Amino acid sequence: MTPDIFQTIADPSRREILHLLSRETLTINELAENFEMSRPAVSKHIKILSQSGFITIRDIGRERYCLLNQDGFNQLQEWIAYFDKFWQNKLRKLETVLNNKSNNA
Amino acid sequence: MTPDIFQTIADPSRREILHLLSRETLTINELAENFEMSRPAVSKHIKILSQSGFITIRDIGRERYCLLNQDGFNQLQEWIAYFDKFWQNKLRKLETVLNNKSNNA
DNA sequence: AATTTGAGTAACCTAAAAGTTACATATCAT
DNA sequence: ATGATATGTAACTTTTAGGTTACTCAAATT
Image 1: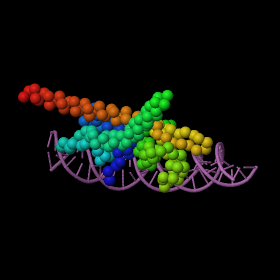
Image 2: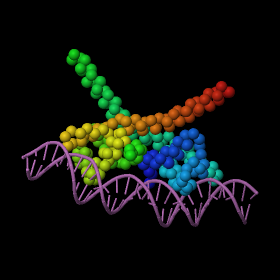
Image 3: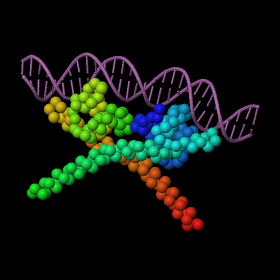
């Protein structure tokens, strides 16, 4: 079952992984060096990030290179876009009110 | 301790609450009517949403009206903006490569 | 003043998430 | 072939998140 994107980025370690991968492509072991936790724990996080579309894995020999995948971020953007409309609409309504005020003055 | 915004939106019920509030302002009890869970459970979610800046509460008598607050959404936008830069940068680099190719042709 | 209503809190329970260790597997180097 | 390295998986433990019920308090209603 593919994990939900909100759940995926709720974990600080996973967000840190994304941050590290924004600087450079890294293997699982290289990633693990940046954390206190064990390598299998990192491995699990990678799986979740991969399944929910935040990273892509490129196998080269016995190594797995992790790189950012835009899909996950786009899904998140879509969610926020809905609420962006809400705020824009609110602003528009406010402007209408202000316009009516000046018209009636 | 104020909860982190990612943790806050990780819960489906809380996202549903935000969705409901994008349509109309509701009191805690009115919100609770939309869910299977008990009112105290909803009350807890409201507290978390409020503390992390996704909603604002306006007390009127014994009722508490919940409305969306842009702060939480903005924080989320900021996080995504960092990675947006990553993708834009990647695109820019790709363009540079393509330009060099045509120059050398 | 007594009752009802809206809501917060405390104590507790349960389920799920995140971590661990131990083991398995495949690739690389010698 | 043998040993070392990179990684995945399984079984287990611990922590934490989300839910419940019971209780309290304050505002509205009668």
